[in-house]
Every structure is written in C-alpha cells, then in structure tokens.
Length: 281
Image (cartoon, rainbow, N blue to C red; front, side):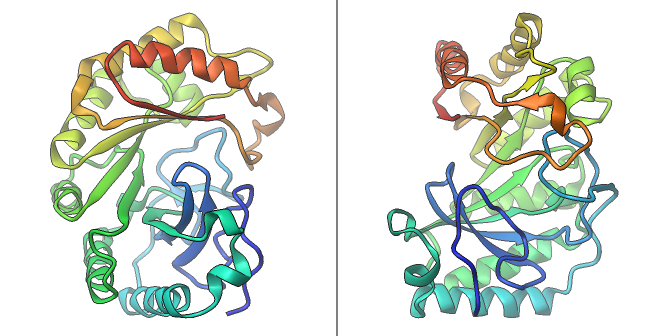
C-alpha cells in the first residue's frame, strides 16, 4: 500500500487509493482517524463556505458498494494493525488509531445505505478486536435526523461506543444561510440536536473564522450560544475549531483564521453554560 506521509494539514480522500476508506491525522481526534467516505461523488445537501471538498455539488450520496467497503476497510485495518503503516506514514507522536469516522466529501447520512455501512464497520471492528477500544464517530450536519432509518442508525451508533459530531456553525436563519447555504430556522436545528443527544453521545462542532475581515458579530454569537443553552447538559461537549486547511469554495479569498485568543474567549462563554469545550485554533 503506497501511501504518502500523513499530516493534519492534508485530509485528502484518495490518500489510500481506495473508494471509501482514507486515513488522516486528525488534530481534533488526536491521532489517526480512519475515514469512511460515503460521498465519493462530492455531493452534499449543504454547501458550507469553508468546505475543503473540491468540485462540491448539491445532492446525496450514491448507492454504496457494501462489499467493496468491507474489503477496503478489512485490508486497511490489517495494514494498520499488522503491517508497517504507522512507522512508514504517520508522525511518531500520532501513531495510534483514535477512531473510525463517517465523514468524507458530503453528508454521510444522505447515503441510503448508511445503516448497512454502519453495520459493516461494526462487524469489522468486532472481528479485529477494536470494538470498545476506539471510537466510532459520525460527523454530520444532522439535517436528516428526522428520517427513521437515520435516527435508528444513530441509536445503534450510541449503543456501540459511538458518538456524533453535530455541525452547528450559527444560531440564526440568516447566518446559517450565509455559512451553510441552507434555509433552516434555529428551533428546528435545536430540536434535531436534542434528539441526536438523546440517541447517542453528541458533540457540537463549530467552525470559527473571519469573513471579509470581520469576526462573527456579538449578535451571531449570542444566537449560537442560545441554541447551546437550549440543549444544555444533554451534550457531551463542544468542539471549536479554526481554519486549518483552505476552503475550496468560491468564498475562500474572503475567509481567514481567527486568533487563538478569540476562540478561547468564546470557549469561556460556553464553559459558563456548564459545557465541556475543546479548542483547536
């Protein structure tokens, strides 16, 4: 398996020359994350202006070749567990498997076969003795949680040492449209977030950045904090992270990283709500 050296600055989905499986060094997970990309067509039902996916299009994931997914994941797990993958391709400080994460180039739950793909991963983690030793994560915008098949799969995830990282970048209708490209009212977002937290341990993940030279306004931050306040201690915590890799969207020249001090000041406000916060500037 001819893989280049991994870096937290490069989350290329073809780094393993596979369709569905790709390894990354995740600064938030803290080690090697084995990604499951159910959206190889670069299709998502949202269009976030900070998204690093090139040639992003609106849409859903295609049909998943579950047999191929199983072969790829089994092959890769064998290389990681019994080969020299870690020594050859991973910086020494990150040579540990932290999770298997449904992430990739679009919304994973838009795949009709997401529940079956989850079952494939659970079976292979059991076969390799990794069940309960590493996290199984779903990185999601939560928009399809109202679908029974999706909510049932998330409940299954929760019963198997899993957790959801739920995207929440804004707290007002206007800001959600500007950042994520979707028309959603904050009340519906809060309701889905509450439901997700009931089904599975759930972290909010929020991308913080400046746009056109300005940090998010106090009005926007108050609205965002308001949603967190509604959900409260049902959440496992909040991930605040900055722009580590450049956006591949047309808005890219208008976006910039915020100072670490800005993120830490926001984190302190979240802590005052009684929530755990992890900051990745």
